[in-house]
Amino acid sequence: MDDLKLYVRGFFGSKTMASETVQTWKARPILSVFDLTPEALQHVVANESVVEVYNQMVRRQVIHTDFQFREKAVKVALRAFGMKNFLLWAQLNLQSPTFTQLHADFLNDTVRFITTGKREMRVDQWEKLIGPGSNDPSDKPQLDMSLFNGLPLGYSELQQAQTPNNLPNVICMWLSRQGGFTDMVMTLYTLFGEHNTR
Image (tube, rainbow, N blue to C red):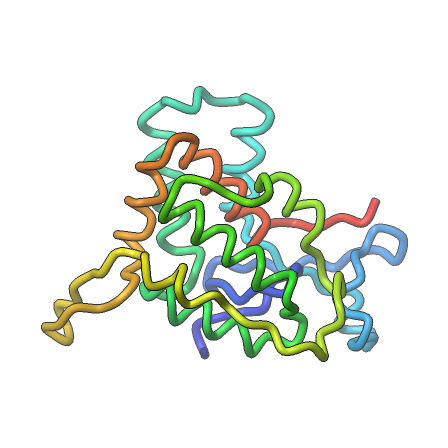
């Protein structure tokens, strides 16, 4: 947990890739309806590498099929979660003070896409719905473990054993789906990107 930082939309991600900015009163997003300290109101955490890849893609500054751009995006994805075990990362998010059932539903839908190639709701719609304080954090969010069980296994050289949900293998499966690259980049932005209330 020490290597993770709470991002603006309520998900944990890489501490080393996080950048904090101080927002002016008018432009700042509301981090949580339950955390109104001056520090929480001013500091916004985003992963600038994720924001850069996302902006390049949606503004069509690069060609999506360009190998160098895809390689850059995959490298960003591998570091953005702050850990190699996707299931453990998802479970740790249940401890986020601003993680709600809406957040859990987004992760469930993302895993559904990774394992089947289908979502219940388009990822760009999730991006508009998921925000800090977007639901009551006093609820008890739950992940659909039947979906997570469909993720690929990995192998830990350190432990000399199989590891469930090894992030590199999860990303490989994600990219193997039709539209998987775009889905991955947009999901990364929803998890670790900016959030504006304007």
